[in-house]
Image (cartoon, rainbow over the protein chains, first blue to last red):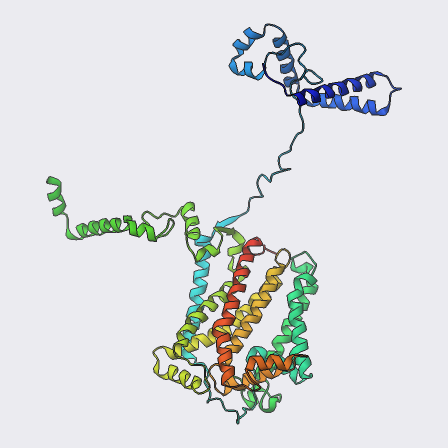
Length: 261
Length: 264
């Protein structure tokens, strides 16, 4: 015989008592509390959730067990005999409806495990991406090599403290700042403006709260960035090509180029 | 014996080809060969273009496994990225290789720097060419990094979850500018001296600790041979070191944040 643990037997008894109480309350008529009505309804719903064919099967099994159990079991095969142990009429562990097992909960698939994320259109990195990267690397190497064959890097005379070239220019990417120096106090032009600019650039993702990536939704951000980039580009171009001796404004087609890379 | 004579009767080129195939099979089947080339290597015996081998190519290569095995189809479109990030990285490698070559011929002192560059250009084989490549590559790298930033902004690729990678990107931009600027002084010619003078004078206007920053960077109150040594070490060691660390985080975050951003 199968041993039924003490705590499970207690729990089953409690559940049965509770179910009987609910049934009694429902039978008590409309005068009974609303909660009793709800309980009976819930019970009926729970009963109706069990598919009819399963209900029939359990009823048949119960009838079999109470009747000539050994013969039926041997006819059905050993598996059935093990699954449905011969139950004594006063089996203490049966549930409210005479079931030997209860449905505790239904776990829907997807509630605890993500079965499969949406399929994505993916390609193998080799060869699709590596070929592109290889060609790009080849192209940039070839470009640098050929450019270097034809254009020499500047090497002016030895550094001389006593001979300041006119004009003295910073590297091209700092010429925007040098251009600002002609307009503002050095602290504003050299520290405050670029400092604020770089800080704003770094904080851009935290300032721009717009979740959309579509250009038509980002008109303000795109305009602001474009103005920002154009501002620096124009300053760099002026500083590079339109500034002559004394850092005065000149036209390169009149005064010539004062620009070394 | 009969088969042997048949073989001897075959024309020489065929026998030679058969012999070559046999030797090739033997070499590719040897323990040394299989220990060097891991599965998925195109040099392995019987390499075929199969999904399994395509995955192995990436997984079994120290260089390629920066990449995932598969990427979104849209991520390989050149019209989306314009390859700008990759080109920036590749230019950094190019700068490293050419820079190491230049280091063999350069001493960072005021007395020797200019002469070393001059001799490099006139007497060292490929010296001028490599120096040109280093210089133009550096300017190109500033441009590609800048354009990469603009591309990322216009695609809104800095939006969650990629905010922090944008911050790292801006740091990388600053490091690129600093690398370029420190390299500017090293030829020790008039262009270098006065461009750096203009640049560092601006730094001196930083409020509170401007003069101190300038003093530390120049190794004195004026640009001199100490400045040259400092900027040399910054240029060839410290800034690349820091840059590589940030690059590693940058690349790692690209993958952790779900690959490159999606289409607009």
